Amino acid sequence: MTTTPAPRHVGLFVTCLVDLYRPSVGFSAVKLLEQAGCRVEVPPAQTCCGQPAYNSGDNTTAADLARQVIEAFEHCDHVVLPSGSCAGMVHDYPRLFETEPDWQIRARALADKTFELTSFLTDVCGMTSVDARYAGTVTYHDSCSGLRQLGVKRQPRDLLATVDGLQLDEMADAEVCCGFGGTFCVKYPEISRRMVSDKSDAITATGADTVLGGDLGCLLNIAGRLKAVDSPVKVYHVAEVLADMTDHPGLGDPKDREV
Image (tube, rainbow, N blue to C red):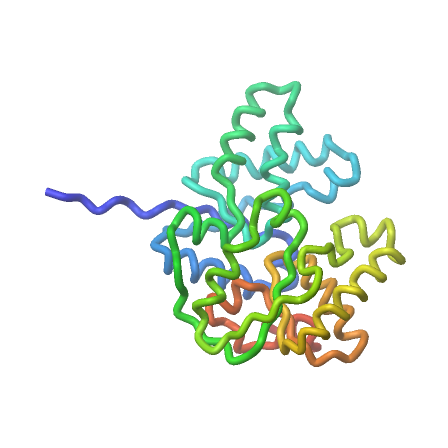
């Protein structure tokens, strides 16, 4: 007698920006995870991952937020985020508890089972294709934390290659920061503005009609610059395209808050 293994119990960490600005990214993540055979839970007690406080040197507040996240998600088999930046912060949790060994053990256990969305779909679930269509030419921006901290590079591209009708044209310097950087854009606005201007120019040079990425902070920053220069380029989170959920305005569109 054979038994069917229980589906992976995945806790979806929605992230603040997705919750407040682009809930369709969260719905897209749920759809993709369910297609991969996962049982998805969105713990209601979740809140900010603590990264703004951590980047500002306020480790006390960051640790308080980390405790809340750990308690909300540690019962799940895996924790998945549609954000390399926030997932990277969870991986940094053990550093917050160097003088609290019990909490450090719990933090490390959570970090070990926390993944960025496309990485989880391909590397853990073994997903090799998606049932989606997108009629357009896209280019892809690699976000810093996902790329450098978590090694997210090929995973979204592998899945995008299976989207019917989609053509990917890589931009120059796809791996260069867009200038958002969380609190960086607040502390150094002039530098940030120049960086996102360079990114906008690189996107425009490809001739693509759409730019995709895996971090909403970067995408909001890029969308703002593209809108400022009256660019027609659409901006979507990669999950929205992979889940075939782009029947709504892209980021930067005046109606994008209506999704």
